[in-house]
Image (cartoon, rainbow, N blue to C red):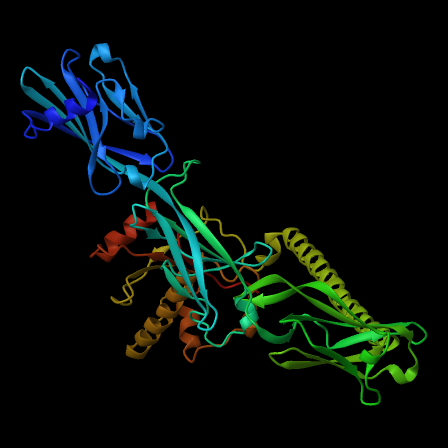
Length: 502
């Protein structure tokens, strides 16, 4: 049976009893293998699209349709039932649905394979110079794309900025009044449809070089003041961006026009640096120089560089000054800085010397204080020998001061109401005085009785409190005599007042 008669017979079994479905993806111009499992003792064939919305027989048993002999190949071990068809150099024409049919014992088994060609996109960019618009046009399969942020590079490959991740962008977005020449450069569009190329990358890029027309633009780095010296050759220059190229260049002064008519003007290609989108960007430009003649005193003046192209014109002024004036000004600055440095250095040295002197002086004072003996401050107080003195308790003077007194010596002076008040006042003063320190008068001053300010009741106080010892009282003690007895055995006196014998 020929392959054509087998195909005609098997088409009667369009409603197959057993059917399986698979999908195969293939890159354009690559090979695809469509797999089918058959019974070797049966009849089998492959059919598929003919490229014109119709189907055609590709193989019958092991025979291949001569129309596709350069495209097809039967692969696999047919003895194991592997009836696989390989399609080489796949293009859009081979995309579609393929059917592998296996007829045996009046039963038709079919395997349906959908072949889908994939192609990573190739990207081109469409430019609208008038409206400053760029459009990214990828061409791949499938045709659903994801776009990444546009990139703006200089002509030398420096990244200037990132733009939106849209298919279409405005070159002057957020910068409507920017100069055209700053928008020039290389723009890159990146997109993907999920299909990897032969290098394994799923993101594809396209780029375009843009040069927008603008009038001449002098570079900001060009100096307005330049220097020369009498007797040497002049060398003035300016840097400029100009696209389209300039049609005329004039260099003139207030007394002379124009150096473009002489041999002293020189125009050369030059890499300029401009400020663009907060970046220092290197671009292709021009350097216009005035050189070749010897400077005299009258040549130190202002020179105007005037450049014109078909878009417009621009003028830049350079003042030529003598280098001698520059050296004088620099020497004046140096003298000023030298004087300032001397002043600051003197202040620093004086500060260091002052700190050293103060440190040594403090150290000397400390040594003098450490060599002073305590006996020098207590020579008028004397020492009391408790073994040879007899003390007797006094009466309760006041209940508010909570203090206890012991009196020795001649203290039997009768007191009235006023003396009791005076005694109370004096006792309070003495008690406060005794509690304010550590039990002694100021350790650094001797007591001179002649310089003591006397209380109005000193005649009474001096008689009452001569040779007196003051003891602290316990807050919980209610009986004065019990307190006195207890203090005699367990406490040392707070304060001792005695009269010095003449």
